[in-house]
Length: 194
Image (cartoon, rainbow, N blue to C red):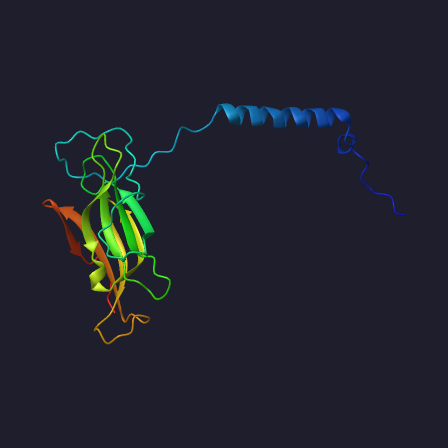
């Protein structure tokens, strides 16, 4: 066995005092990190046009449970909420909920409806205030988001009644924005239809 040419250094051997110093340093870091926590995260939406209404404090978006959606599902099938997103769509400081709903059919691909739900201040019951997509249009919604007060969705549809329900042949990206007391539908920048 060959001996090292470098003499052994005293500080390369661990002793109990090293472990005590390490444990003390770790405990200090943990204690300091629990004291110096960051403040709660807040998200600010892009500025909305001022409507004269004073924003309310931390309102919650309306729930979809118990809402009477305008769908004709028949006597045995119930409406099913597939997607939802929320945000302040009209700039009044209270969030609305956008819900994609269809009949919970046991077979096939039932068409979707897209509805905006609102809840009056002090009320516990939400109601449908706008229909963005009617199920009679034979459309399915693949994506749904609310960004900067606008509803964005990707819709799948059919070019004619002859196209089978299994195989939509149209894809469209759409945007709805609240203007002049109604939702205006447009195509978002950069979106292409097929």
